[in-house]
Amino acid sequence: MSSAKLSASARSFDPQQLVRESLRHTHAYTPAVIPDAPPPRVIKLDMNESPYGPSPKTRAALASFSETNRYPDFGQTELRDALGRYVSRDPDTIICGAGLDDVLNTVMHAIIAPGDEVIISDPTFGVYRMLISLYDGVAVNVPLGEDFALRPQAVLDAVTDRTKLIVICTPNNPTGNVLDAAAIEQVVEGAPCLVAIDEAYAEFSRTSHLHLMDDHPNVAVFRTMSKFAGLAGMRVGYGVFSPEMARLLGPVVPAFHNVAMASRVAAIASLDDLDYLNGIIERIVADRDILAANLAEIPGVRPLPSATNFLLVELPTEEAKPVIDELARRGIFVRSFPHPDYGLHTYLRVTVGSTDDNDAFVNELNDILTGAGRTA
Ligand SMILES: Cc1ncc(COP(=O)(O)O)c(C=O)c1O
Image 1 (cartoon, protein in one colour):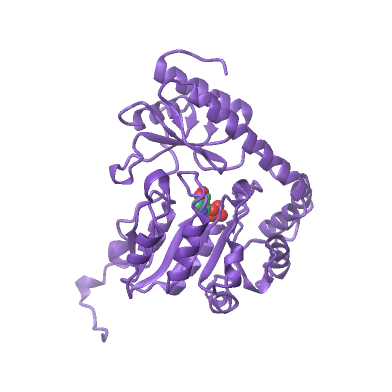
Image 2 (cartoon, helix red, strand yellow):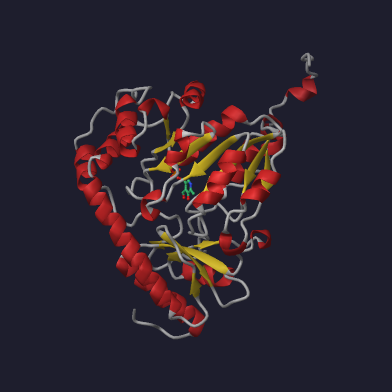
């Protein structure tokens, strides 16, 4: 289309017209309901963060970090070498980013043209839909089945000549379950497109699908330092790709790997402190099981089995939202899923926090639901 000269009246600046039409009504991610009146204390159990700070080696590395004046190594060689050793893959097949979300964004940016389709399986991580819409792609939902199981044949049946990507999240957020390995393999084997496996919580479940990459170049596995390493604030995530995909994606990544200097230092030190971090993982998993047992004692409350650092919990109320809002007024933030299409409007999702925070949550939830305080 050739450009035309503007009339004088059309020369005024209108940001509404500037932003792409399909993005004008994009909703920002809302992490938690912020109560009108500030709560007496804040216990954040809404974003699946670690309740623990950096590992001792990470703390020390950050304390002596001073190179704020230098740009990061655009190739992130040292970080990718450390990650490569951690996941036993060739560092050249690893793409880093400012969080796992950023790497997913890079992939979608590279492969989605307007109208292209991406298959997801709700209920799952909401950011996928947001990213798909950023590139004018179409999210094709093949919902999880009974017990939130992946339906491999239904996923393959949904593939069309516009399908560019299938996203599988395991363990799945927000349901917390590990998806069946044979079902995932069936999708990978039958898919003529890229299959992205989001393993943000793999360190808690001790499951991984990295081995599928040995025989299937259409697989990409996504990981993050946010959860198990307690580095959510540093923003370090990565994807492992086939050599050819990694080569094609490299130039699409902002500044090649988009990881800040301090974040790189923190991530490398964490990967050098795995004994400590494994202890943290064990503590979170043990606390999760105690939290689930305590929740199950509240009449009608049903925590679902979880392989992650969070629990999806069914409440004995018609809607979970009023309970979640009341928890927020009391300073305890958990996640709600009020949209009826999502099928989780009677559930809340709670992150496993410190022992004190978990106990405070159980106590307040019990008080709201039964009117009785509980000493956990
Ligand atoms: C399934 C899943 N993928 C990705 C992310 C984002 O990870 P990051 O902090 O590395 O962007 C999250 C965070 O909650 C998540 O639950």
